[in-house]
Length: 161
Image 1 (cartoon, helix red, strand yellow):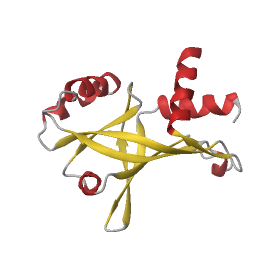
Image 2: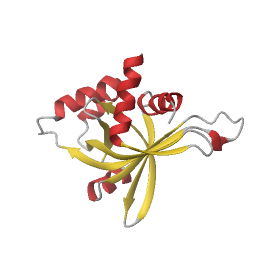
Image 3: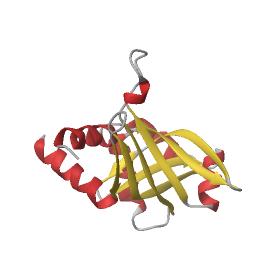
């Protein structure tokens, strides 16, 4: 993968805060848009209401994917848009956990407007651990990457800023 493609992947994943979360329930897929924050520990944080179907799905089956895409401006071929799907598992972070406060602070650093939702009893904070990355840098330019490669790209991108 070329350096420009790595930079495109880094911008897409690490500068965004909004993605499509896909979950599974009874072998049926469900995709929902959710806010996310990148955690410095190499994980993503999701703060989700238990009133949402996707949250119930995650509590029953931790397998998930999180996808981001460039915005379709309505011109050109959308098949050439850069996009990525992160595959992995989620784990709820109990409020009583020793790591909850630091995870909450990291989430709120990226999404400060979410502060009030942390007072709602139905919200659960999850960590999403990436196992595999599927990156499409445009039509016919697809790559399957390891989680380690994604985090190396993040380090390189941040070092270049």
